[in-house]
Length: 146
Image (cartoon, rainbow, N blue to C red):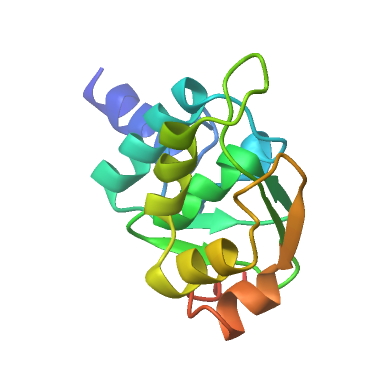
């Protein structure tokens, strides 16, 4: 029994039996959140990765509330990522100052100033910034190569 428990634990850590369990070899990513959504769907993952300290990779298409992951404690951005910004809104698509502020608070000061100065957060229109620019212009960490 002790051997079986150790074997199951080792397989979980390797991601074989328990693929949802984070491991140091695998980082959490923005992939399943890329199309945005509601904060209630994002906050549990933000809290989980902040508590674990694991690396969180922003990769591929990342729009709307997906950009909240820029505020994760151990975040990195892939150069090929594409982040899309807009104002926060309610379910009726009315611009909501509290939702917009929640997004802005996740960004570092340089990015926050940029999206405000360029009015990215004033409308529901998407405004794209490449992962390369998020890294080079706004100082976010580039993800290590796998």
